[in-house]
Amino acid sequence: MNNYHSGHFAEFLAMILLMFKGYLPIARNFSCGQGTGAGEIDLIMRRGKTLIFVEVKKRVDLRTAAFSILSKQRERVRRCAEAFLQQNPQYADFTIRFDAFLVKFPFSFRHIKNAF
Image (cartoon, rainbow, N blue to C red; front, top):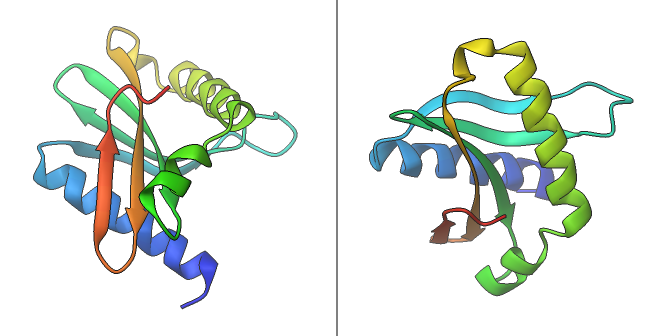
């Protein structure tokens, strides 16, 4: 499995595991559009009145995955989250949270709430 496919599989795995924890999927690979400088959000999940923007990272170990979310990428995710909220006003009164979901194959993971 190449990196592209294993990355998408990691995102799918993260979504399923979060669903088992009571999260509802809202969007997967939400893109803000080319030229916005905002990029893409891997997963947008909902739990109660909280909207969670999740960055999924698959690496050779969980520590490397955690340190691979750089400040520049966190800022892009924040800008993309703002664009999502502008396009989806039904979530205006929700609490917003940014999580990380770290994956190491074959089956090791860690969900970090309020990661950034």
